[in-house]
Image (cartoon, rainbow, N blue to C red; front, top):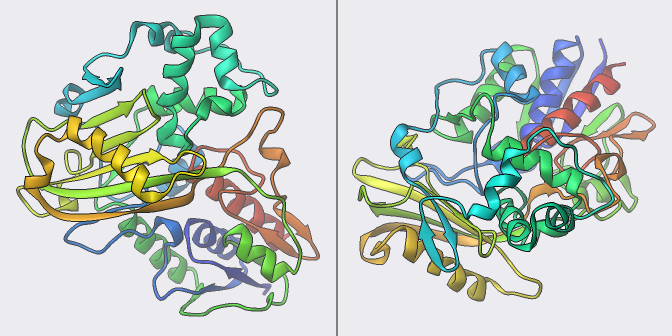
Length: 376
């Protein structure tokens, strides 16, 4: 029976381990931290906060793979009250409807976008500067980038359609990512996977091996430099506040590519009864520090959650680096990222490597590819 080592216990590492084990391999998974999850790891209760949005898109392969193994667990969609609580910040004010210039952009769903032109230019030539600015900032939630319009149109356009008009709609997993990580780990163990936490790896294990870590950590293990991959950087603010039905559910910031979401509306389990858990994010500008970014972000919260300072029961803030996975600039596609197959039985998996998909789907797709190569 083939022996395969997986380094890293986030989504990519767990999926790779399961895929190898299902193919009949004996798998050992090594995770440096004392808990699994990687960047999907959330805080422990009673306030369960994540490093960014946490939904699953039902039209993608990641959802189908999980559903086929009965690993999704309980989930919920956007409640009707959530639709009523959707807001847009535009021109410094909150509004219930998007600006008129944005509507024709979203209406033409079937067109394809070019790889070698940036998204802002592509939209501007068809709908004007106002539409291009709004459509670009709409994608801050999926890129964590202060200027999503600078990215390849072929990268941004399909992601915009999937995030803002998914069919079927996205789902919130009850309890957040922590429960999904636990289910993945439990399923892996039933397949015979040996999982070791607190196991920091300083030398590359004997191949075949799947390295499902950050690119920097992978480069150290491989003893070689890996190409730099653009990724998002944003300031995050998590707040628990005493509940008030007047608070917005979602705010899409068309002025500065920010995002705010009240996650306890679809999933009340994320905070104690009578409290709302809100997360706001804002991409940092070039050279901008945490304090300046946080001040800009709090101005968004002031609009969406009136009087939040007096109602706050718990708070966490920080800077999220490389949280959006890879961002493709004009002239580049996912094929140009670091290859999964590094040769000599070594394979990479994660959200910055050469695999397609939206957000966590890149980790999933690269993990499945790496595992299939490893067992072959």
